[in-house]
Length: 133
Image 1 (cartoon, helix red, strand yellow):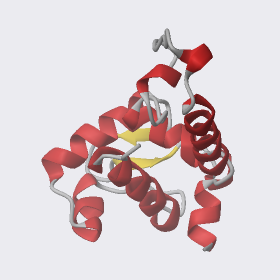
Image 2 (cartoon, helix red, strand yellow):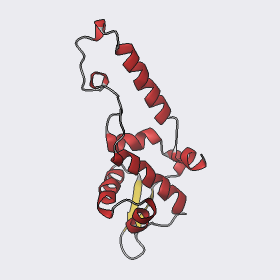
Image 3 (cartoon, helix red, strand yellow):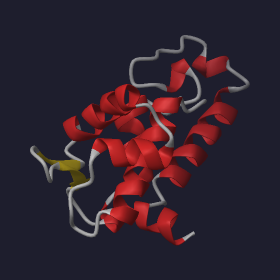
Image 4 (cartoon, helix red, strand yellow):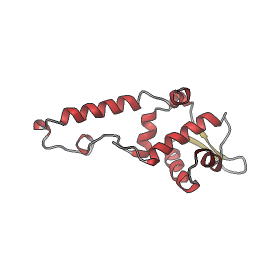
């Protein structure tokens, strides 16, 4: 499994909002400047996070974005799945994947163990944990 820049930046944006908003809306430009992400690319990531219901938005001069919930209520795995989709390391373990060799596959348990470890780890961390570390 390799997390793309969208997943990495989504997590970075969420951490940025958690650390800098203090309840206020933060402009896209301010986030882009602090995180050195282009506005255009950031718009795509913000759209994904907004669609997932993770952000509140406001238009106008004092508008921007802020977290819809407290940092401790956001699971890192959920944020990554909102932008990356499935985090499973191989196709045959995905919801749509069907492995016809599963019964005789000597590597299936290895891949399943790796998948379980990834899921357990990303689902054990919250935004608050990342801010505190």
